[in-house]
Length: 457
Image (tube, rainbow, N blue to C red; front, side, top):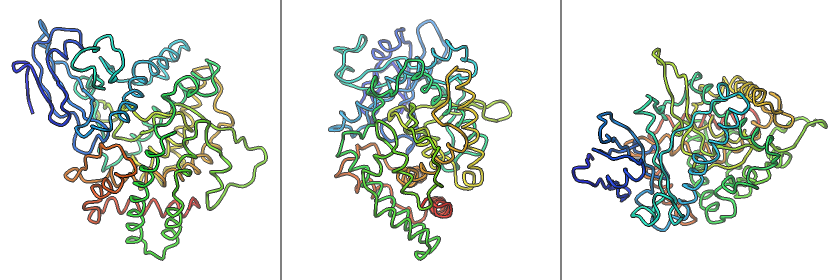
């Protein structure tokens, strides 16, 4: 799909967004000479919105400028309230919170160490809310974000979700995640805040207080978990204790179990640890105080862009897609990232080393930001809390592998709000051809086996 300003309008058929010369001039505050549009992401790479690539030349300047427009998916009718909440979170992060974190780093003299990479945003709008640029225009009823396309302007690229991240990419990503966590923790300390979500409601999880959304999401996860069980049984045998234990785990899949990792006041450590098959030794001196930081919420390789040097080695990573931010334990982000982005052949033998990379980075960043670390934070405590976060890995990342590892040619357009009536439909779409997906089978079965062997289930 290629359109230019000669026709004065490019209407991406997937979203119906009126992408015109007038819109671009309003958003970019410059006179546009020509523009063209293209698909901004590959099929299956984006689930809650549509991305459009835009190439623009301005009057008096022959240089091409590249942007991405993020807007409603085509099937958003009836779901815009849910989607508007996601856009609200992301705009809040780009326009308010992330700039505050970068300012904090600069004030601490740590901007060259805790240099959180952020995509430049040119414009954004939330449907129905006052906007200096877009009120009473054709776009006032739209939620969207217009940002720089770092892939075209700086050479960033997205990793292959099927291959997963190797050790070098994984370590680099963990250091960037640690920057986000440390900066948000420092922000709380320097502003005398016990919780971010008391000041910023955007940090309340998107399912908190929404029973239908939680019910629908859990329903979908149960469907996908049962398929994961079938794959594990095919590989390991239905009589294998790992399969038996995972079957029991699925039978106990309730919204309350998910909510334990999303509580606004933090995880009840004793309660969650009691769900482990092999529980930690009693330690009367252990500090059970919750750890709470700004959590990306959807922290996996499709929401990361990597930059490479001339030797093709990754040297920088940028986190993108901030639509499901929440305040949570850092180990929830870590479990989500490691179980969705890193194949088991890399993750399992290197897990302690990877946790050590995160630990050392977090400590280093807190030092240069001149704040204390999280209460009781140590390598031993991090490993202990990550182990109970592996329950979360079974609840969410493991089932989601069926979506992440779905072949591109069969990529489902999973842009629906998951309510109590839609989980089965999305499941049926996702699982087309899963019985031939050997990569998915191997990944699921090896993960379930490992979590049995270490006593999680």
